[in-house]
Figure 1 (cartoon, rainbow, N blue to C red):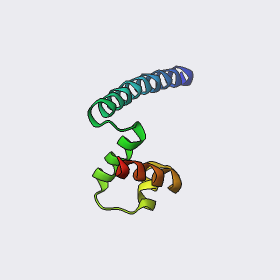
Figure 2: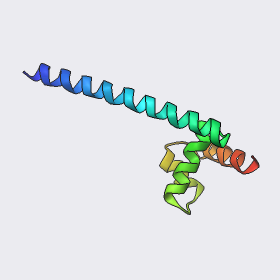
Figure 3: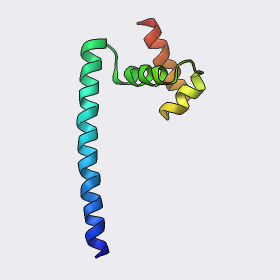
Length: 80
């Protein structure tokens, strides 16, 4: 019985991952076509827009990235 439940959970998880991957692909295509920025830039913009005013450290924490990567990403967005 437990093995059957676990199988259903794994199948549901896989289906969720496929939906997430398809959604991320649509987001990436939209950002690259409409905004002309990388996927990383889109993540930075979306996180900053969601949070409003924030520090670079809190932006990095929200994205789950190290400070230097986020700093380079933000610098690139500002430069562009």
